[in-house]
Length: 245
Image (cartoon, rainbow, N blue to C red; front, side, top):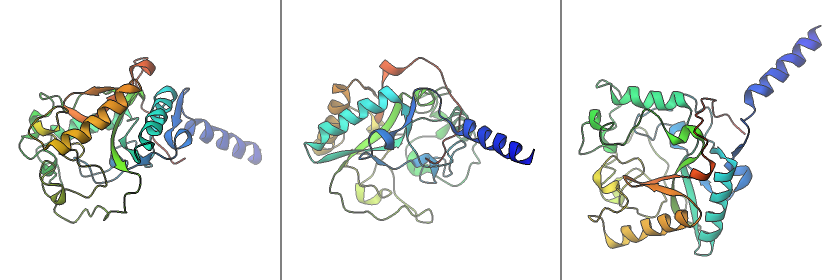
């Protein structure tokens, strides 16, 4: 009897951890793509790991992951690599973002992510939404890094970093090409075709945009880092947690 109960518990745990059909771990499809999963830690606009992020893993619908693998192969010819910041996002995390946006007392102070805005306007301006393609496994937030990039100083939650829209040396550490702003920067300069950034920063964005578009991804115009793969979107949102692989 005890052995049967143990076996049942093991089988139940396996079922709970099993990914829904057509979801895959990106590292199983394209292990060369770097992962810097911001919502699994504190280096994000809430200052906390978000609900459902039990491990820093990128999960996606299989067609989207395969398309990213093709983008990665294209960039390798230029000695560049993709780096993902967020992939599948549980709906509970989307709800937590909305709760944070409406809480004027939320701590810690993360205004470096919205240096020129009142965070209560983030919904109206389209930076935060009640529903997300990330929860359908077809959206990805990402950037480009040199394949030979040297290790960078780790994020320090006790350090006070500058505006995400400020000079790259003052922002939180990242080995990305300089895209003009950091990831998740709620600022007009984050718009993909913003012209107030330098020609070099605009050129880096074009490399990313063109590489992703070539393989079927569409960019969200307010965020240079956000792309969706419509070919895999069946409009089903999920809330299963992201666990270690």
